Image (cartoon, rainbow, N blue to C red; front, side, top):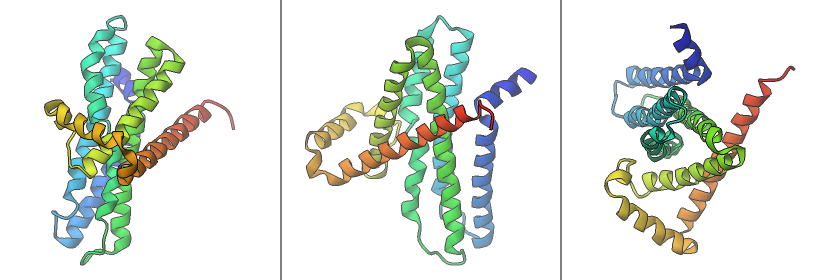
Length: 225
């Protein structure tokens, strides 16, 4: 049990779990105050989806430590992680649903959406940090950063496709040709698709800066004040 506790602590399970409990607690409070569980129920489902890349990255890092020379074992959990990775930062886009509603003050819903968005960002960034560590152990520092930017770039595309084209992550496994055709079509003429270009670029920039801040804070914790 001590070993499991240290392993979970190392990969930030406890603060992520606490943040998730806060989000669900704020949602439960809203349900009790309004008597309506339907409004914002999508947040709970999206939070579940946001946990999937984190859980698969934990599986990947466990396999990596258990069988360090069998790198091919990481293929399936790594692929599933990459496909579901956009679900974590996707929670930010749920702010589009914010509006004044009966019985609940607007500030409460702002905090509700912020708690879910923060948890999603934390889940995504932590899982990316763990996966970068795995890639770094095999390929070195430089290639691991190319991997980070590749994953963030795909995440920006994935969030756009999920929010505006209404694709789900599992659709990438079921209908990859249709989704890739849509991406190629929009990327071939990005200036005639300003929302696609602007949203994806800004989202990639946001995730990149968030990840760099996370890495910097993580390294700052190694030193003395």
